[in-house]
Amino acid sequence: MAKVSHTVKARLYKNLLTPDPDDLSIRTNPERTLSIRDICESAFSRGGADISAPAMEHATNLFLDEMGYQLCDGFSVNTGWFTAGPHVRGVANNPREQFNSEKHTLLFEFHQGATLRKELANVTVEILGVADTDAVITQVTDVKTASVNDLLTPGRNLKISGYKIRIAGSNTANGIYFVNQATSERTRVDVSDIVTNNPSELIVMIPDLSSGTYLLEMITQYTPGTLLKEPRKATFDKPLTVE
Image 1 (tube, one colour):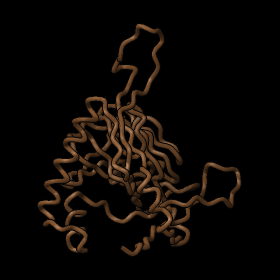
Image 2 (tube, rainbow, N blue to C red):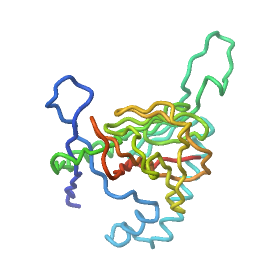
Image 3 (cartoon, rainbow, N blue to C red):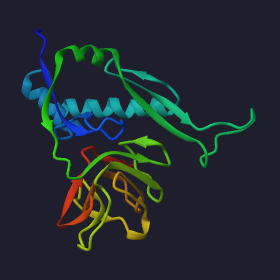
Image 4 (cartoon, rainbow, N blue to C red):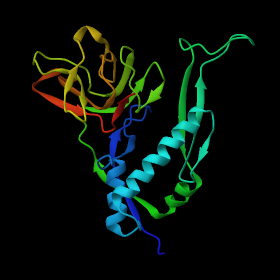
């Protein structure tokens, strides 16, 4: 089978992590997030699957359910495309110490596998130019689990990094929101739960969100030295999950 060429799109952003004012970081500009169903329907329509999309989706869910079961029993998994395994974050202060959920965190780590790594030779990166940097969220960290751009722990802190993200201005729309992707319900962070409010970093307490997938939105009138007449919105481009 002939090799397929792929393209990943990216944009340039001001790099806040180096002293050079001309440095630019390169961030991928992801397409929409695909579900299992989306992938199965694509495989069937492209002719890459010899079973129907619903049958493929059913088999995939069975595989993932069993994989999750085995991971929870302490096994590691290597699919070729990715590897996964359980990991405990935290330290023990003496040889007899047991796992303590107040100071230790159990999570699963996923890494690209050899098959996916080989595909990098078939992927080119198309830089689309300098991004509109009025306000950008670059990374979020769930403080409880130390998960980056992935998990949310209701009732615990979330660190939001970016630039021009300070919440400022009198417009009633200003604030931080979690938008449920399934229901479109918007949950606003109470002003009193914004712990840190700086141009490049926000720390907020995550509201009491139900299980699901969310998008993070920030609305503000902030700009260095003044306030905008109308608020602007920044949406983080990666979905976040409450388990």
